[in-house]
Length: 150
Image (cartoon, rainbow, N blue to C red; front, side, top):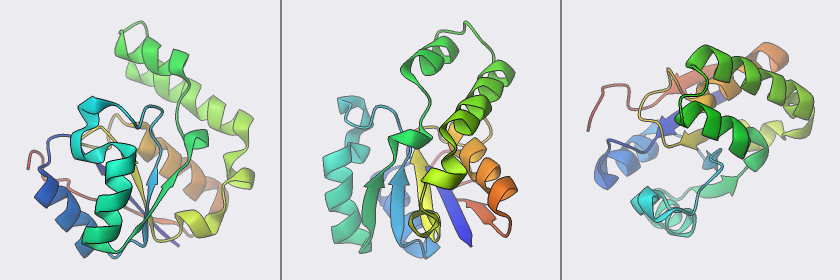
């Protein structure tokens, strides 16, 4: 099973869609809590679904069960907690939600987890992918666009 990840910030639309088109992914799995913000630009949910189909021939799926809670995200963004505390609380949340049992593998197989963070190092999409790899086994993870700003 192959699972990819990508963030849309610091990427032009042309670079973002080229990375996805060249990746071999069959669908983008949006793991953002807030996917309709005007700040998302070309990655706003309805626009993104249309662009993905038209430019890449890909499906769009939103799985909010793979997003942090509003409170957890707020605590991290407002710097009430650091990355390690955030990661620990998010891992606990995934365990509570039993995502390894509730998220269909076929949706994530050859799917690309989408979030806003440019790089996966401090992003929950990496935590999701690694958590599922530990539970499911046999999961190859590839992070797209690791070259920095595009």
